[in-house]
Length: 129
Image 1: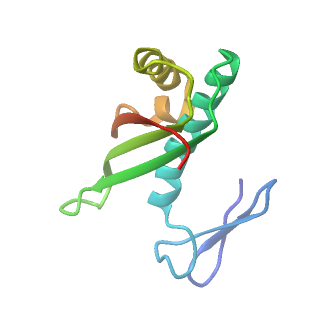
Image 2: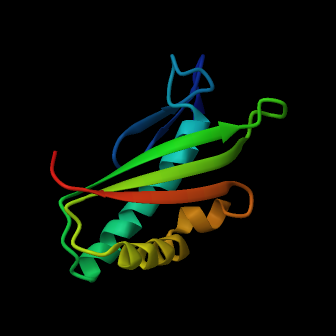
């Protein structure tokens, strides 16, 4: 990847399109937002693959991410809590717990940051709204 400086951001062209990153949300995605998105979406993608591989039916997966940053330091990301909402999932809580464990072990982004960012996860099962 190559990042090109603009007046208020850096830009890179990727396979899907252009990504603009800035410390100011008025000019692009903020770096911490991309970091948290990477952890959440990587985990969600691995979770989906595992459910599909195990032929466990589900309708939808949503992920809520809460972030705590160290305002007394460099405002670094200290904690990320991911809350997975699984719609119409056909598995027990115990089975989902095991799958979440496998998800953590197989998500490359989680594995990359696990020793520097405290990551917690919860899940809930919901039926169609």
